[in-house]
Image (cartoon, rainbow, N blue to C red; front, side):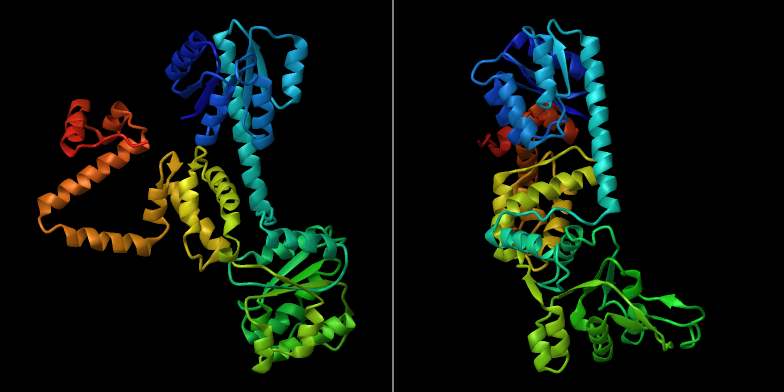
Length: 452
């Protein structure tokens, strides 16, 4: 069900629009002025906004500029009884989807809303398709260390210098490599990825350098290796620390001479590639243990970029959470959900062993299992299973009689549903499939009171 916000200082206009739109099965919220409207937009996610121009406290044009700058994809329909062609043109230039004069033609209102929703759907579908086509996403964060990484990429990308990206699993090393390629002079060439940890040691040389027909039993035809495939572009050697020593020796030669030889062949082939490597291992320790060649390390580490763990950049979690929630809702074709500030604070209390990858997975779980808003209660319930199990054990120990435990759970469940529905008793009773009078009896029995 699409959710619409009406921002207008005239109560009769708001009431009329609400009645018409709710009859058309839209969910409707109201705000009596621009400031109240902005508060609603901070607390809730909407599919369309209907915004009056002349209002007290904050002019509609001011609201339009602020909303359009923060959420350019949100369709805003301007309405006014004091408008002109110049006003309409100015509104559209500032990001309005359309402009409607008062007195409102309700048919036109409904058509405009449908068009706005159609456009919003197309924009979302386009974004989802782009994300599926390319894995290069924005590096999200405003912490000093992330800003330093961005600055380093800007300086390094236009050169052909080799880069070694280090960091724990899930921190975003691949994303850094992709941005280096995208901002380089080789961006029109291919970006070829090799996961060195996923390829058996006996096959890694064939994968990197290719092989000639008959080079070994299963070599039924010639194969072009990754170095050749990446000519003119970038070769990304992920998990380079897991590469065998014999393969390391041949990679070193390829980097020194810009030439490779296919397995089973004797012809030298010139290659023109920029190499970016990444690892979650401490290569200096691997060198001490004779598991990694020091000369290869020096060849690869012309530029070193270390990507910090999420626990080292907790201040970036609010931005990451907002971005991931928006993307996940779009990917699942769900109505946009809001994550509350307290929920974000709860996320910042978690120790993230899986870093950005784990955070995104947790947020996907929260988006799917939560209501319109993701609250701190849901973060505690779904994001930290260990904490939930401990709390569950405490509850089980507290109650010895089944009836007492049953009443406790019934009380908690009803309180949670009421809180999620902003204490709308009718809506909660409908969700729970019980009579409203029965719900009132339960509220009185359990002594439930609205909080906040």
